[in-house]
Image 1: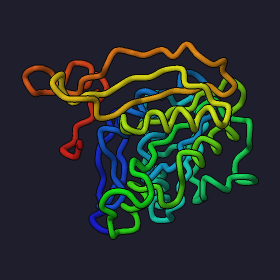
Image 2 (image 1 turned 90 degrees about the vertical axis):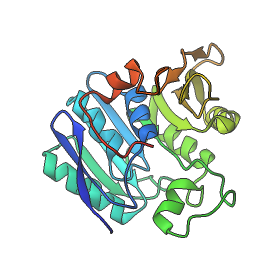
Image 3 (image 1 turned 180 degrees about the vertical axis):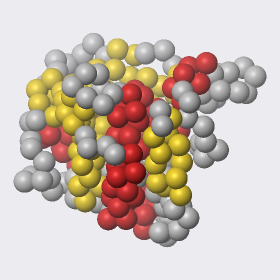
Amino acid sequence: MNNIHLEPLGGGLEIYVSESYRFSTDTILLANFSQPKGRKKCVDLGTGCGTIPLIWLRENKQLEIAAVDIQENACKLAQDSISRNGLIQMTVYNADLKELKGVLPFGYYDLVACNPPYKLGGSGIRNPESAKLIARHETECTLDNICESASRLLQFGGRFCICQRPERLADVMEAMRKFSIEPKVLRLVQQRRSKAPKLFLLEGRKGGNQGFLNVLPTLFIEDESGGFSEEMLQIYGDYKSNHME
């Protein structure tokens, strides 16, 4: 792996990242949107270098977390970050999210989160580097695979949180409902008021009744002057980085 280095995550936590395995603003927004409260059992599917679980633990140490990724190098980075920060609440599993039977207990978790590949398999310009290809294109898993896995892992009433591009909203909702997860909370994200939404954050409930989708106010990344909005500054907290996308 190239250019492995530490970046601060705030709260005294640091994370190992590399050229292939790093994080973006989307990752931090999903971690904030899905943040578990109290004693909860959580899974992060496709965890990469482990950013989302580390941010969860930055805010709440009363968690039991399983971080899953199919890529061995990503898992090693996440494991190194666990060791560096002394976090016993988080366990990394080098596994395929489509084949978790016998790896993680089904019907056990309160929360499953996933920052999935944004592009359909075979669409767009394919990145020749396998790590980035897996992260950006549905080469190893589809939305159906992700939602099916989340549904199996969650207990009744458990939360599934995902982020995606707005053009995939119907696809995500259809996949959720196919596997008994009802979309319940939606939030759109815009760079600024003059731009169309660039991302959505969606929470579904395992076994939830259909209907009554709560659409939250739009999250603006920038304010009118082009700096970070007040809400984004609150989300970032004392995290400082030059790698925001």
